[in-house]
Image (tube, rainbow, N blue to C red; front, top):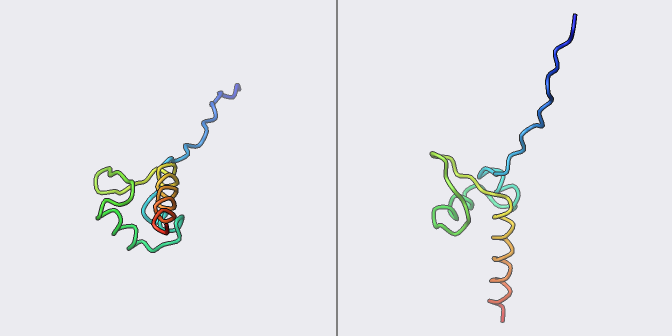
Length: 74
């Protein structure tokens, strides 16, 4: 009997992070993330009630926060 060919699919890699993942990634509490979202101070988007983040956008946001922090010192 001939075996049927099944193409192997690459597993889908998510390009988004959840609030819990962003909190862990940044080393802050989940409450801090929710506060930043509520105050519209962190880059995010919603799908339904879910709050999601693009890792690249979070990295860019962190870089911007660092620049502001350094500028504030002078």
